[in-house]
Length: 253
Length: 253
Image (tube, rainbow over the protein chains, first blue to last red):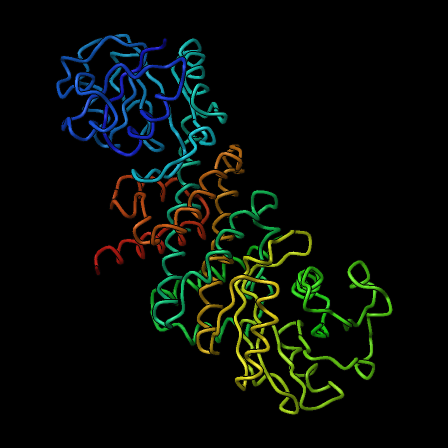
């Protein structure tokens, strides 16, 4: 069995511990959390440590903490020349202290504690300083996911920015959609099949080919009528800018 | 059998003809198209007319044409006092000529000709001038969908604006995500599980509760690093405005 120590107790740490628990080749022998109770539903008490000096010997240390804590945490590890990776989409590999061999183990998904995810479908983006560590990380990643990619730091940053657009910003547009519904006393439920179909459509079609609507058709009458109906200044600004963006794309090509 | 005549040959007309074909209570006895061949894969040739004066007697006429053609088409109908509806999310009921009884039959979904949809899941928003017509439209709608709603014109307009945000604008953000991937030579495939999960998440959680990411966390370092990395002026503007919008929401509540 490959021995893994998880450092952190947030959403990513939770999901990784659960995913590794199903693997037949990986064992999470220990996890570190400042508060033991954060991990208690997932691991036996004796497998959780709150002290860096008590970290067990393992083949891989996965640091799943917030971006700005990675440097500090990796500097506090009481050993050298072991394989240490972080799970961040943004932090560089250099955020990790140079006393250990470095790598990245970035599962690209939106994690919430109370949502069950099929980890198998989650893309894991890997990077490492040397080839043998990469092969090892690939083995670990493949034990929990069918979608494993070698991604360098520049690509990983691009993916993360892209993820902000297709996840955080998209979700915010859902929120605006819901606010408009609430204001006009219609149920947001009515829009849910549309939300799902919009996402499903780009599994097969490119987003550019999937585009429809007043902006794409340059239907000025509808656009103006929507802008007049929107009472919130912020919603109006977003409507204008995204409409312009859809239209300028159309013109360029 | 309830007799329906479909007027139009676009995406909505196609999907409605296919949906009614599966119904045991509704029969599309005829369809009108300026070009007969547009409907030939769906209906027998003798059921397609290209001339308004040859429209058959029916219980319901569904006008599924572009918004700006609704008035003209409804004025050309060679009969009076029959039930005539349109399928638009934006056009008012008054777009229909007053010589017939008016109504709205608005299936809220993004239709593309070559995508198979489960029509049963598609919300149909109904409105009519009088109660007995409404009950009749409800019967027709329920024969093809489990999600039938009575929606007045103001609500329908709000739903349509909301749909622009959660469908057209969301799809455009997918497109930007893909462009960032292409520019940095990473596969857009890696983002697809995230796109699906983002949509699935709001089936159960409110979008506000589902929000994550640098804007929500007010992670200025990541936001600045993303803005520096984005080379396209338009993408930068959209990034800034949606980040601000997410943050101002957080502050208000």
